[in-house]
Amino acid sequence: MQESPTPGSAAGSVVVAADFVSQLLPVEHGRRIALFLDVDGTLVGFSPTPADTTIPLHLRESLDTLTRQLDGAVSIVSGRSMRDLDRLFPDAGFTRIGAHGGVIQTPTELLASAPAPDPALLLRVRDVLQRAVAADPRLYLEDKEVSVALHYRRAPERELEVRSLISELAPDGSGLRIQWGAAVAEIRGDSFDKGTAIAALLAVAPFHGRVPLYFGDDYTDVPALRHVASVGGKSITVGPRLSDTIYLHLDGPGEVISVLHALSVALQARRAGEV
Ligand SMILES: [Mg+2]
Image (cartoon, rainbow, N blue to C red; front, side, top):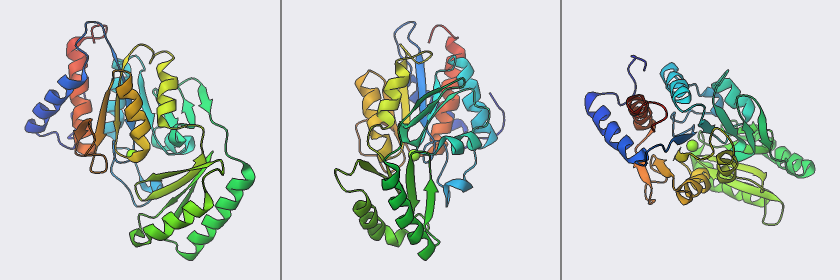
């Protein structure tokens, strides 16, 4: 593993992370794991806008090491567009799930791309939200392949107004789904979520037959957390938003990075083929 300091890498944290990892690894001989990791709020903290986020080198090295150790059974799972994930994780040797499960890109092929909602509907949504952003530049419009997201992290006092506006734009029965996130509201098609994407990946190599581990911090992760728990995997919530659930819990990205490091050490100790 890399030698550079990582968040939470003090000696005490390493011991705690090793203890945590012992709860994650399957005890059955020969069972191997697959790793699914949300990005914002799980691997990295939140930035004022999604475009400000960068991935620290030590985190990328950790992901690359785990990908080698798990024979490719690692996937990023994000609400971001695939274009944005390509910017954050250039030349990734691991799988990326983008747009809340709407797009699945393995290192070699585009596995799934959900149909975008009715273009006329989305055009109207875009138009209204662009006007909202023009009136208050603290709002930030993120245009993805199959959805549109309005971020209001820089204008938190406007949350109720944003919620009201978004709810009007995507009423029940419109064929659109509202995805509420951390200071973001997104309007997208209603035929997929992160849980359906995880299920799709667990049906194919190199994920098939493995015990899934899922790390996520937000309501958008709940379908995936539930799916992973339902198939005998381990669901881990991160940060304050999902801290009252039944799942294992970590306080923030610093602890996640410590656990990933400890996981890599444990995999190394057990050797490939035995985990
Ligand atoms: Mg997140």
